[in-house]
Every structure is written in C-alpha cells, then in structure tokens.
Image (cartoon, rainbow, N blue to C red; front, side, top):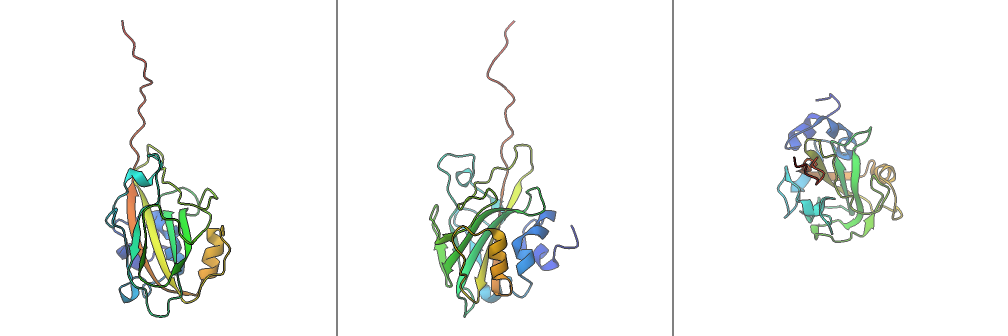
Length: 198
C-alpha cells in the first residue's frame, strides 16, 4: 500500500487497493469529513464492497447507472456532488465514470437510470454514466462511489470535466461518504465457433 493512501481511507474502504490513493476523496476529504454527522451513501442494488450487477455495465444491453441513496448531510450543506471512479484503472488518474453535481443539499436519492441535474465529462469525455468495461483478463475492478456535501453551490456549466469540478470544490467540502462495488468480466471464449472433425 503506498504511503500516499491515508490511513483513514484504508479503514473506510472494504478492500483497499493501491489505486485508491488517486481517488478524488483522497485529495478533497480527511478523517473528520468522512461520514460526518452520520452522512452515508448506499445503494439498493448492491451492498458496500459487493458486486455490481451486469445491468449497470457494458456487458448488458440497455445498461444504466445504478440507484443510489444518501442520508441527510450536515446542516449548512448547499449542494451535493457525486463522483464515481475506477480505483483499478491504469494511468495517473483513476478513471472517472460519473461526475454529478447540482444535487440538493438534503437527504435524497437517484433512481436507477435517472438523469441527474448536472453531469460532467467522464473518462471518455461524455457527459453520462460510463459503463464499467474492465479488460476480460483483469481481476475485479473496484468502483468507488463518492458523495460530497459542499458549503456553497457550484456555478459550473454542464459538461465540465473532473479537474474543473475538483478545483471548484477545493476548500468547500463539509462532509463526504463512500460506497464501493466490484466488477469482473468473464473471460473471453477463445472458441471461434468452428469445430474440426476427422
């Protein structure tokens, strides 16, 4: 585990991996913010640390974003921001799968496939839920759902990228909560559909 991964984040994640040091939560939050006032993020579709259903991934047609729900953030929260990243993606940054802001600063939820108020650019530069599609021969990837309570509303235009959102959030995070899910694709079948007979 790299030294840049804070101890409080190690304790907060079911199965920490080295890539989680690159997560937005490691940059913007600290031990006092995580779960402050009982702030928590959950999903009716998977348990924390559980497996993501294929209906939320690139392996199924008509796949959509999973449902999420959160408890009341601390008093004074003006807006909530949601960031979903793949801690096991390659590169200097964890791949961003969802970047959402404009959520009301109170207890709430996003239904399965619901379109959020403001969506920024994911790792593929699209403003939508980026369907998880890890390489077939990779071990399970960990997707970290992060929600942030801010003390001011963001004034970003739709389609902003993660750097823009993180810069706007800097110094304004009151509380944060995390939820993780894993996904591993089945190995590709090498059989080409042609059988040889003697």
